[in-house]
Length: 385
Image 1: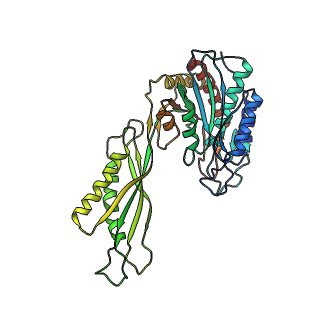
Image 2: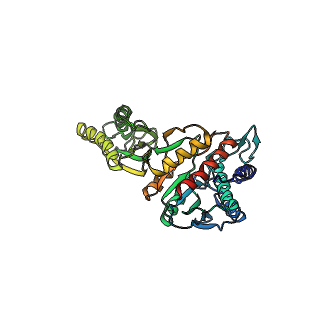
Image 3: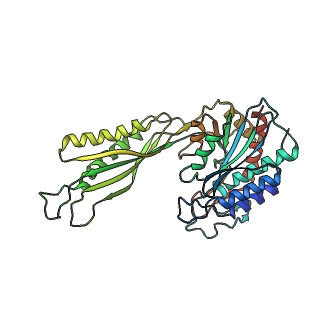
């Protein structure tokens, strides 16, 4: 059976969702947050005939869930998208939701309000068709993906399904792996002294220069390693540095933050140990050199076997809908799929086509969202048996 997808409804929902400001308040102080869009999604579920379930995560920030209960003995499937967006600096009309030449424009159109609209259209299609699955089909939208993933962390503590489809943008390709990251702090210690007292001061900034030279060598070595078949090699860069207090004072400290992009199987301890080895080498060569290393925050990489049931289901369904075999690939950035995977939920990622993620002009191709909705609906029929 083919579940009908109401294309006019889907298009209207993309526009309506884009027109709601849902900038993550952890990214911009005083931003609107996800309260209004969560209320809208809850009302949309109600209008479809599904009772919304609200998970209060933080203040007015809440996840919105809905479920089509199965008849029993079938596998359960979770569809997921996030409610929040990044900021709008530089955008001319961030909340317009303008439809032009088959594209809808505005912040979050591509990342990822179109996916929410597709999920709503899928749930509506199941309700109106009367088709009942054997397993449960969950609609889930979460807060805070763009910052700390508090919404997904909350969701996986309270809901478990056999599999999940994360609808992050993929250009309708099937993503089954992505990188993780570790943020690492390196801090060199010097000795403050008047700038004229060379015999008293120890310059922490100069010492950090030595560290950065060695870390650049490590960075170059990392990208020469044999990489993951879908993700390539690991990498590292130094995005933030701070040191010293005044022009005429020897710097008593210098602090640099590193971002180490990690592959499946790499651990925080192993990554920190690599950096610590650089520090130990420099300390052994100079008794006045002192530095500390610590991990600040991390998110694990993720992968799922290409022959996992949910991957095979989505790939086969996408092939039917698109009339071509979708590419299996790995994504370079981190996604909430890692948290789903850590919770024991087999997760695959597929989403619409578009452009301008986090950029001054963001848009989504409406036809690709319609195709996504068909893929999600037919995947549910195939999987929830």
